[in-house]
Length: 459
Image 1 (cartoon, rainbow, N blue to C red):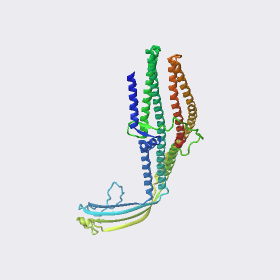
Image 2 (cartoon, helix red, strand yellow):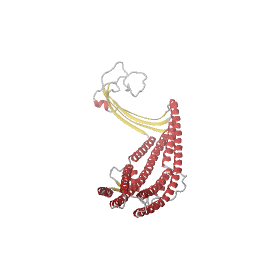
Image 3 (cartoon, rainbow, N blue to C red):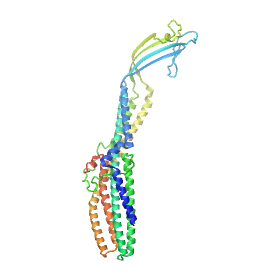
Image 4 (cartoon, rainbow, N blue to C red):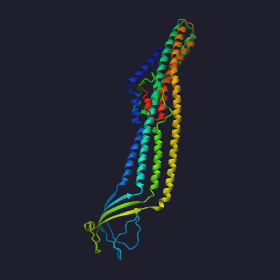
């Protein structure tokens, strides 16, 4: 038994030493760590920034396109009279029309500058730009919601870690209490003042207390690792957390529990998704419209085949510019046969709009139910938290009375052990009741979409 006592003291000393050298975190620090370091939050942030760049790229469609090219060629120059379809996969058959093929190759050069500006496109570009901007807003809303949800998860994990840490401390106290009584009962048995069965019962109660302590410590360490994961901390050593008065006070009642914030982060995500689908459908419908383009071009060309049909095969004769031209004009392009496919795509996008609107309605209903449920849980938790101190006070008095009666020989050991168990249960119930109130308040804040409801209640 002395070895067991020494082992418990060593374990307690190691736990205390771990707390000294481990990193200490308040709830606000844990929230900041998780909002900045958790991989999924970072992924949402990168997605939001990427969609912002896409929106900026779409806005550049308003600007004119300028293309420049220069080339040197070496080849023959033979051609025929006749029609030619300018397929991009076929080399242009330009060349002199003559009675025979000439295999002599010459050098040539060609430089051009082309400006195209879609000055009027019946809303095609504006529809695409608007759709890309709303899509970027949707990703930004998803990023904001991810931070909100991560904060709720971290706060809940923080509260659970605190509760399990408190329960572990309660069970350690219970082990110490059981050990003291075990030693006292054993001394009474050895002196002949107590029955031998009392020693066995005390040993069994002490072993049971140790099992409860080990189970509580295991749960605490497991939840601590969960908190480490949510905060994105890579160092897997234990962390210590500040109780912040969660076990000394409970929050006040929350008014207007039926109201959900209009800008609830989760609802904003689904609302923006529906808006983005609607904007895409408009962009698809406008894609059928024609475009009026202003065109300006200038080019210069050199060739080794001169106007008198003579061939000059040296590089300088073929590459120096011999002619130059320019062009100004306006063009209208309208692919009329695209109407059928564009119409079907538009109808498909309209169904996606309905889908996203119904998904929004589903989330709204779920949040309404969650808010009512969390408000109900909060009220019951408040009642339990108000009764728990009464239970603990009564359990302490009962334990002291049972202890005094047992020492005076007026009561048996099972009655004392039962009072000890009741005291241990009352201590644990008080910690659980207080944390449940705070968790219920956190659930209300999550359902309402206002995390400040929870944070402002912390002293």
